[in-house]
Length: 476
Ligand SMILES: [Ca+2]
Ligand SMILES: [Ca+2]
Ligand SMILES: [Ca+2]
Ligand SMILES: [Ca+2]
Image 1 (spheres, rainbow, N blue to C red):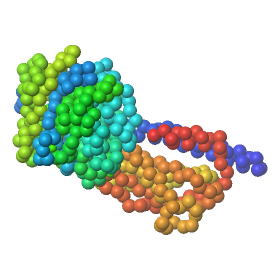
Image 2: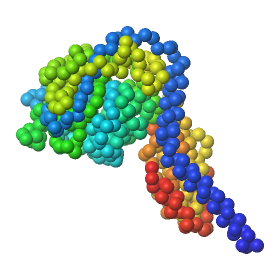
Image 3: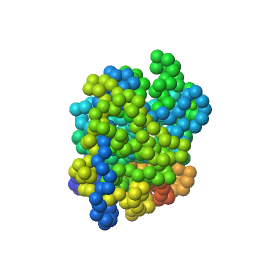
Image 4: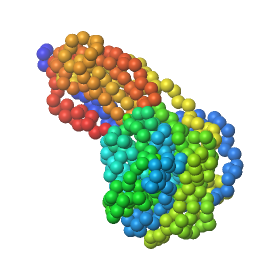
């Protein structure tokens, strides 16, 4: 009798454990799946708007860089001055970072031409190891940021003013030789960063706080065979600005339609938006706007002006070409995202931008669906819940079972955004009742602490399965 009971219990336990393992394996995917769902949702909303009208603007030009980088120092790039080291006057409007900002542009490139391997994102400056597209670095100084492509994915990095570093990584490869819309935005108040590919939300993180604009009284460091006065106080497109070495590769591909804005143009709640289908226009929140339509096709000789047509007060923040390398770049080309008389690129269903200023698609308020549940073992428990939109995960609980009220002695946080949330509580005592509360937050709102169904840990642990579960949980 005892044996039968034990066998039966083991059987159900084994079933439960297998269920957990399967669930966990699937849960390594939900970020991508959720992004796709949200992206599809955004498309549906957009699909209910009007059909795309004939594109008014001519095809124009884009700029093609060749990624010469350190092989052609201070060449094969566009430079936009954002500060004059000789005085302490404010820089032109393209010197964003003292307010919220959005940086967006179109790009097209191949994997064969951009071979930087993937980087680990997190509290680091690893964006400098990708093929650098947009470089607002400062050599060994704070208040800097930039965008590169590492392992096929865009990487956005920010360093605060003594507040640390953060890089976030996209999950959708862009190196397929098709045009893609890239957008990043950063909130001044708390340093939150967001990254979007073709309107689809990729990742977000609580980045370093504070003003990251180029300091008006900034003094370039003496790291560039002399002071970095020819690189630090510029935005550089298409190259690693300092030519610091082959380990910091440069972007080899096309860029068109770049807009810098002093607001957050896109969703801040993990939602997505319909990618623009027309060249950008300027409005009161536009700091700089480059169509790269100067032309004609062919070389962009050194000192050719790249016009900022934003009309922003204090501007224009014009750039200029630095031509050279082998093959020599940059060159103007007629290959543009809205080229061929206005035929949109074939990579997605053409949809009209929600409004000319790119107002984000409306998204719902963050909420927890249903009641959180816990699956206990003897020394750990898996707490699970759902949210209606992507958000992070947090559980607080009491390690010794002295009640269900604050203060709570333990808190576990998962920063990766998800719709299905699972958090493992460890260090529990067997055969003990526990209470816990959960919370999710997405950078725009935070749910209340919500009490989940209490649980009692088991008396017996099944060690043979536990390493599998724990191992599965360790991989994000
Ligand atoms: Ca200055
Ligand atoms: Ca922060
Ligand atoms: Ca400045
Ligand atoms: Ca253009």
